[in-house]
Length: 69
Image: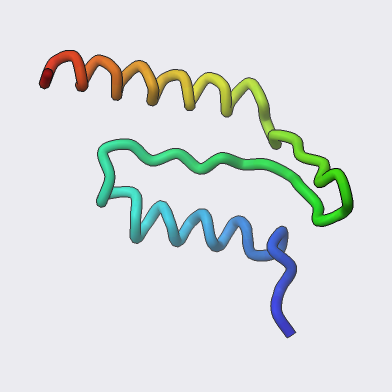
């Protein structure tokens, strides 16, 4: 039997950080809750943190783009 995704989340995120993170200039895990129920409800685990971290990455990428081109 396979584990439910919520049961694997912490381990999967840890594995991504260890194995993948250093292969990219920027890396962000977008944490959210969703279901497969009709209408597919969706919510951010921590909206403020996601908004802040995503905004910071966009700013850094934008500045790097301007610097290069």
